[in-house]
Length: 131
Image 1 (cartoon, rainbow, N blue to C red):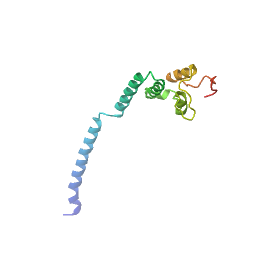
Image 2: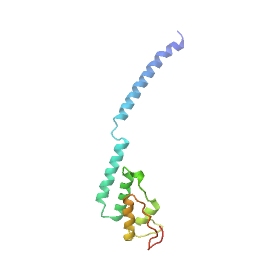
Image 3: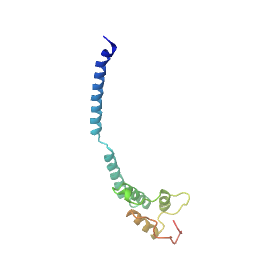
Image 4: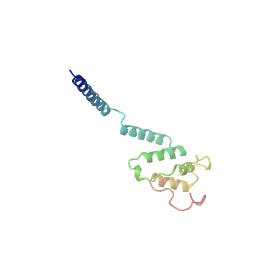
């Protein structure tokens, strides 16, 4: 007998075994509970719950509002504020140390941002100049 004839049955069994293993792996992936969609849905539920329960704190409310907008189904159509501007808006920018929610102009910008509009589109602000 030559060596090529001896190796063939082993290769056939190995390829069959790999086919079974591949089928098992695909079935396991298909039945995974935490798919990407479920993870995103779970994250949305957590953020919505935090948004409801932390609404009394203005900084936490602004943060969770930002995350709710980022997780919305139409997130790619919305205008998201740059992180540096946002930190300044809520008073968490250590370099500037502005107070959180500095008046009605700030609230107007925040409301425009929540609606998905550009928050910096009404010209200079009286108290600080251009943002």
